[in-house]
Image 1 (cartoon, each protein chain N blue to C red):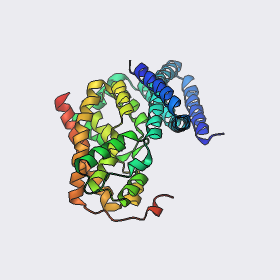
Image 2: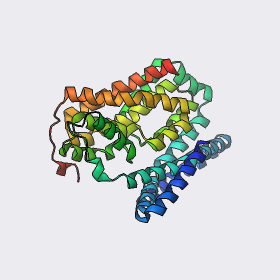
Image 3: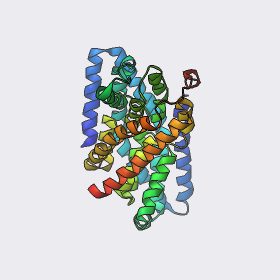
Image 4: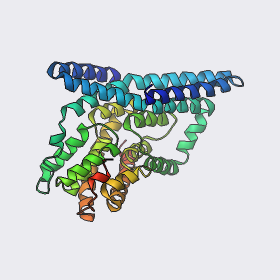
Length: 176
Length: 157
């Protein structure tokens, strides 16, 4: 069986066990908790599958080769915009971006663009923005985006001032 | 509202992509299924944990925990977010539930930002990729940014 499916079933079994144990002394609490759980899962199932499909489409249509061009020391404003765009278009948590970041740097990306790319990858994604709006409100999501965007660019250039040339680590260490 | 918009966008995107290129569409769907299965255990545990907490602890107690200690709650959430790195599809429902329990939106803004950008527990991976100095400076700057965003959110919201 798929190991991820198996751990889902294990989690499911543990949750049912906890609620069964809870049911004997406190049937009301167990029922209420199960109801909350179902409602929470329902909220998530209404949103997450669509978000994952959209991210998958982004990932499939943005070619990785383009990802590795146009971020060099002379790239200027276009490089910054490009780094932002690349980060938003890809899929996965920030640590999934590290190997790509390493190859970007090996191909001559400047530090600012590398940090901007990592930051954009971590927090700015269009489908995620819709998800953030659904769970916390459109105003919240838009305000946070409006502050994160200049913040990430600022971090990138501050980083370049503090650490112009990060120590080179052979990429063979990363891609294991 | 949002679920419907997202569903329409996803179905439309898949149809359009399928007409243009079947192989890429199949790769996209494979990614979605794999990522979904990967997220499922934590999503199940998260919703069950939230459900249990909300039924065992009275709502007024939870609200007091987050509200009475405004600044403490703020730094507690930001710190927790800095320690962990949670994939965004899990982070948003978690933040939504914390909001229902009474956590303030500014605190949640810095929570989400540190949750996605700063990860002390996953920093060994970053050190391996970019070195210790790079990792430390980047995470430190991101933490400052997250606190700043939370503080500004408190003024603007």
